[in-house]
View (spheres, rainbow, N blue to C red):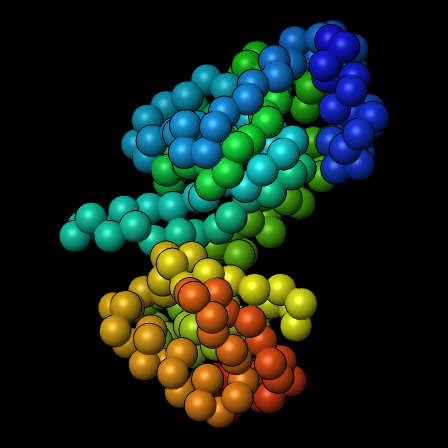
Length: 219
């Protein structure tokens, strides 16, 4: 319990999430720590717990029929893993793996349902979060199935701020195309001085022009 209190006091995201969580539920949280790559949940498996990310990043992905890994999202502190599968007691629709060292809060299905029952504000926020996730996922799937490689690349890069960066290997996981096709688009964007690349790290040079290019791709 002392470790949980330390987490709440040091993490604004977790403090907000657990603000009205009943003590009967709080005392049942387990703090778990995993090294990079060691935390895994498999697509198609039923789990009886949910996890809240306290520290670190976690890859949410699926595997295509050819075995290619396609990243659907990257979860960060404050995100909950496995809530909609747990509510329906169904297998995970995607796989999960830690991209860094992570600290997680683990809670059983029984305690999670108790939390939802006693904390109506949390239940409402959870519903809103699930709706946003479904919308986000539907747009991502739409881009995988319908959009050109260039449109997908521009969409991912346009979501970055000028101070952000993305590694090429991370970008490849989020694009439904071959590495060669992605590299061809990256070269074009670099030649247009919209991005800069150094040792596999991609940064934006002109976000406004990149967004303008993206709007043309959408027409």
